Image 1 (tube, rainbow, N blue to C red):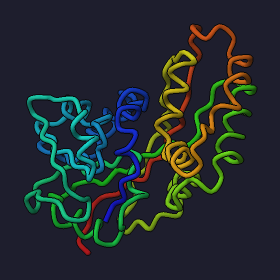
Image 2 (cartoon, helix red, strand yellow):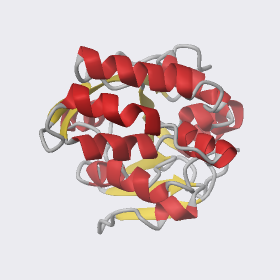
Image 3 (tube, helix red, strand yellow):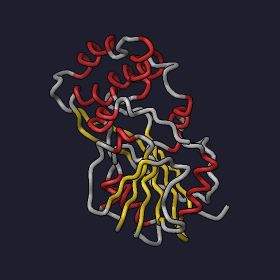
Length: 249
C-alpha cells in the first residue's frame, strides 16, 4: 500500500507546496478520448484536484492521509475519498484519466497498475508527474543542494530515489505517450521558500529523530544569498512526466 509521509506536516504541505501549471492540464485533456471523469490518485490536499475539476466533468481524488484531505480545497464536481491507490472504490471502466502528482513513487506498483486497468475506460491514460529540486539562482541552488544531499542524507525515504531519477526507473507497463517539456514557476519570498522546506518529509524525519532543526545552519546563508527577504525570486521546477495509454494486462 502507498506510504504516508506527509500527515505530520499537512499544514505546511498545503500552504507551501507548489501546484501545477496550466499547460499541463491543457495537455492532459488533449490525450484522452473523453473528459467525463478524472481520478487524482495520491492527491494530498488537492494541489492538482481543483485544476482537474476545471477540465473534467467530475473528479474523484483519493489519498491515504485524512489530515491532508481535511485541508483540501472543494469544488462542486470534486469528491475526496480516503483510500489507498491500490484499492479504490471507483467503478470499473469509468475513468478517462488517472493522474498521479508527486506520489507514484510511494505506491505498490503491481497492484496499483492492476487497479488502473480495472477502473480505466477505453482509451484512458495514466499520467504520473514529479519534480525534484527547484532552481532559483546559482548561490541559492548550491545551498539547497547541500541541504538536500548532505544534511538530509539518510533521512529521505528510499522511494524518493525515483524522484531524483525523474521516474526513469519506475516499472511502467503501458505504451508510452510522448509528453511535452513543462516547467512550473512561481515567485516566492524567502519565508515561502523556508515554508516549502518545512513540507519536506526528510526535514520532518530529521527533526523527529534528532530533535534539531536541519534548517538552522542554513538560514544566514540563505538570507545572504537572497537579499531583502521580502523580495520575490522566481522558483523553477522542471517536471518529469511518465505517461501511457492504459491497456489490458
